[in-house]
Length: 404
Image (cartoon, rainbow, N blue to C red; front, top):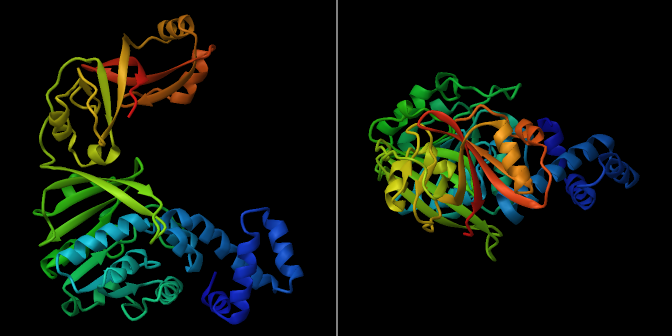
């Protein structure tokens, strides 16, 4: 889509095309296109409307009912912050006293809209003209155009003296190709500009990839990893007055709410990020920590809460004698601990009539689907297999889930 096509969608004819597209979206694309053309919608406008209808349908998982009135690009939707994550971040920024926020690289406006809904005045800056126009349209659709305005330009040129808070989500994909950028210095804006914001603005938040190298975390910053319903979705650096602890893992569980469509319950684990968990052999129960806990280097803190140990210092599976309830890890009961041997494992599962297996792995080079085929399972029983290492040796654990 280009600016001309987007402008066409903003006309009364475009609105009618969007309404018609919403009624036929989700089915066969050719049938949907034919339906719009038979209704008299020009081919180009029909294609643009159907694309938006499909993107809005996909966006409902991130934005709830609000997605029905928003505009998206494919890349922008993929990179946009989930609504529940953006809302919690906005609440934390507002609680810190931020009244005016610059969103440098605002994209389609997911974070800026959440901040505006929290009562913060937001100045968005976006380099791509189409994305900037869509962000402004999204602010208008949400009734927040008086609190969230967008300018198309260079984020590094924005005068941050106008605000008391900054949010920055540097682009981590190459324009035009969508390929991921792994070198922070190649981000847009570049990493040195992004990390320098904390020295210029009292409240600075930077959204980063979950795979961020801990060595890149600025001194004194809080690094937070966030998962939603068990999926690791992002990390953020909280700088200046916003930093509260060295490391934080935040786990959100989504649920439908009457006001926003999607709400979330949150639990958090904090710590230094450099503690080490004790090491021992496998015990009766295995804990598989949430990915946010692992990425935040908070496995040792969780081990302390569970009176658990590692069986290998480099692998984030924890072992305990009791099945203690925790929101930060899944618990499995171990029935067998075997040095890995395909022949022996196959024979044992056949003996127990196991025909269905869940395969988890950490520290193993084995491919789960290939192993599943090689096991030649048959039977009506189920089991969980954990491929890992114990004291450096390849090991398989046969387990059964512990009810939450």
